[in-house]
Length: 166
Length: 198
Image (tube, rainbow over all chains, first blue to last red):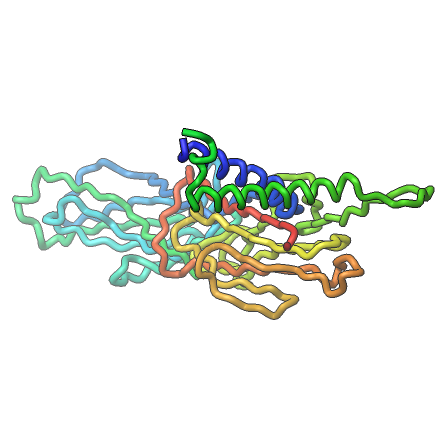
């Protein structure tokens, strides 16, 4: 009973105190939120291979493969200035083919320098469409004519390693 | 047990005395507010004066709003042109301003700005902020900015001269290894709480 009385008294004090305190802590308040989308520049590189012949190759032959590197697709255009290098990923390196890459965009033939990073560097522009036309020339040394090469298939992938210019 | 005996103990008496004092004090307060009155009758219109509350954020009145549109613009400051206009990429940096204008407010003001940068590409950081009018330049320890605008004269409301421009600096670190995808979607959000300073 004593505890009950004390509890009631305490409750009464708290409730009545709140009545007085509440009138002193109310104040003006404004709170707003805002959310903004962030536009990140997107890179865009496309490789389009053309003119791939499936004719057989023999020692002493050369073969050419042409391809394009574009900075756009059907929807997007590259938005970042980039530097890229071209490399070939050859599946079977036992076949003794040498190769060089030429830039033939301007109706002339400019050999691309070969560096540790690949053939290049080449600048990929942004904001407007750009096509670059290249040619790979494979050559087979005539003197390297072992019969072990017969029947083999030569496959390769064209890779473009692009890095943003800052 | 009789009532008198029940409440005999010292502790109980103390409690009773306290209750009586508290009740007396409370009743006194109520009585003085209800029974005190002028002895002479005067004609006139009694006025209740309420202080003005008028705050704008980047020229937008927030008094009756809970959301603002595009308060923040994450546009690079860098003069070097290496990306499409108004787009950000690693190596870029910039700033945005939040202008708190309490012109016409007749109370001192406190503000808290909370920035949410959790949905930004990896490598973007808020580096510093500056309160231009106060020549304060601080590094971010967390993503909150707290400040106040005081009344220089209690007889006058806050004016244009009391506005605060909070400039927030951001940077996308050059060495961040970020590989973008088409489905990426990023945003930055801010909550601005402005309240009367007591």
